[in-house]
Image (cartoon, each protein chain N blue to C red):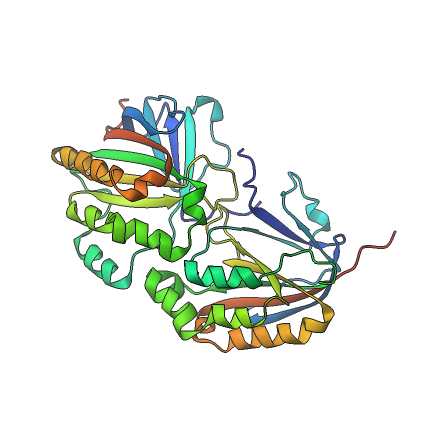
Length: 194
Length: 194
């Protein structure tokens, strides 16, 4: 068995973890994820996860950018803040799955819907530096995954309303018409007692 | 454990398989792959591969296109032939790994090197329909893989010289200056005796 790719992140919902799960809302698709009290976010997949105790477990891998141009990246990276900020005690995990129709499009067709029609990057940029994020890819993992992407967001409680605006804006774009599943999980950083 | 993604292909070098390994040549990088008499190409990863008998085992997943535009794809797909043609009794498996410098480039910068500077698609198109191919991605598998891509090519014996020209042309392009590893494995379709 090969070692785990060190860009893999694991999101495990169960009895333990730094993040308390506040809500799980099914936005698009046939079924939500099961409820659980806590979420554990780890970079290395445990060899033998305590499966009985977990409600669900999602994996994704950070990767090279697929649509951002060099010029766009230079603009964005000036404004981006890292994850793990002290005051960013709220988070969201949004697993999405896009349709086969999306994946069958050519690169320039996807880019056109993503940015020229949907302004995905420009919408996101409006909420910088308040909202920090990390994108994880699931579609090309060797295993059959229920989602294509897991996006993790962190922000301060005062920016929770801005985060709601951000996801509402994105959900109204042409890009979102390709969404087959979307689940919106909100979390609060809360070290477990005892 | 999740089911295997049904876009995963496994290339297992050992004692068995439809393809006899004719040569393994290290083109770029510190080390080649070990020699073996045969290669088995399968779509579903065996749950418990006979590891003791294998010389090596590589996996990759077919995926959406990363650089081809819609217009380019329409031109190419008219000329492309499928794998598995009766007279295509020779094959090549070329595992490559690109440098971190490549992966840190933005999408438009990679596309520019790939096609505008290196004419990767236009070089490939010259050899259609003789050379059929399938590209497998390894970089975003959940495991730590030695290569980023595995490309599988099939052609008739009379087109072996043309295939040599194709890889020589690609190796002289700016794109290839980002290559950190490349191994060129040639094979002959030869059902095992007995």
